[in-house]
Amino acid sequence: MAKLSFKVNGVARDLELDTRTTLLDALREHLHLTGSKKGCDHGQCGACTVIVDGRRINSCLSLAIMHDGDSVTTIEGLGTPDNLHPMQAAFVKHDGYQCGYCTPGQICSAVAVLDEVKSGIPSHVTGDLNARPQLTNAELRERMSGNICRCGAYSNIAEAITEVAGRQA
Image (cartoon, one colour):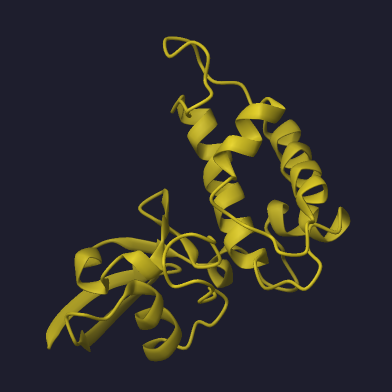
């Protein structure tokens, strides 16, 4: 067992966990934040995506103890039903979900993708590593490729992200 402290959605949280506990299980089982989903439990589907210190991660692949002192944002920390985050609102507007299982991970990833582009972080398809990346269709699809939607709502998801990106430009 180990003690750790981190901020989750802006609130300081102290836990004592088995050192083998994943961040996903700490969030879901110990903090009862069930928005992040356990899909494949192998880091292949992205349903567990959360934002840690501004970077998106697959929380099923990361031990909670590794995040002592970090700031974690889950889907619950992005907005509320009465005050949706712009990305959440765009997903609703563009039907960027069907069954909804992947949606929390998709939204957290999408929020982080826009921050990556804004910060100038290149992707595998960025043509010029010295130039600021642009959110082209290829860039968007590459950056979101770690989030799988079994229902196939990809075009709607892309429309939602593109709308929010346009508002931020």
